Length: 139
Image (cartoon, rainbow, N blue to C red; front, side, top):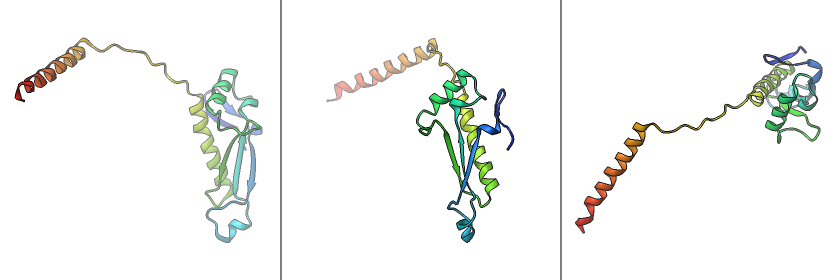
């Protein structure tokens, strides 16, 4: 396996990814009962050399309920008949999830409504009130 690039400055070394294979369900007919094509990919972000301290804290906070008791992020893939395609699928799932966890959310800046929108809102309220006032004498 080769290093897994996540984004600029973040590359997971291959020795940090632990891969296990097992017999899985899914397509394959009788082949499924004898070939270990299902992939279980594990990666421990807390012990990773690929992340600096701030990135590690961000990932651990984002994946708080998704980590195993040992602190591993676990992905299972068994939708293909071939072991190699399942490994590719597992790696392809890890990359976007890690990118999302590393993304710093934009700070929301409070904005004031424009004077025009303020006038329009008050004008609409006034006309609504006039309509309702006009109904009062009907009963």
